Length: 124
Image 1 (cartoon, rainbow, N blue to C red):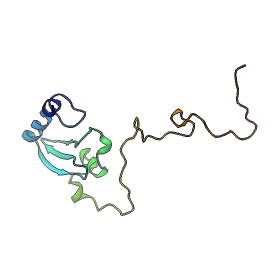
Image 2 (spheres, rainbow, N blue to C red):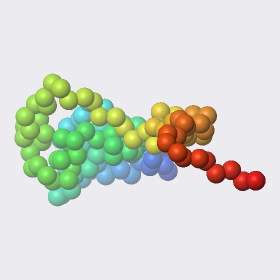
Image 3 (spheres, rainbow, N blue to C red):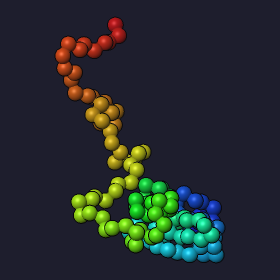
Image 4 (cartoon, rainbow, N blue to C red):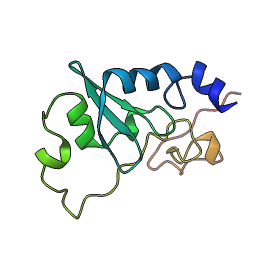
């Protein structure tokens, strides 16, 4: 199933065509801590994701390289990151971990009592 899945789907990693294209027309220039591999060739730069294809999984230093904000590889062009920086979190929209305010239906649909002279309208 893995071979045929990679042959026809693109949302969970590179397709077979992308893998062949990367080997023929590009050279691997690096890999990040998430396992994503970065390629360059014929004036193009691209990433082959390790897992789900989501640009929020690309670290900022590699994103800068992909979008040509820096020319050299991130290890060579950028200083080491400060120790106080936290690891970036992926986009959580649509997942169980997504933010939901206190009045959201997923949290019971009850919000805090209003203050002041506010009086909620109720139909008769």
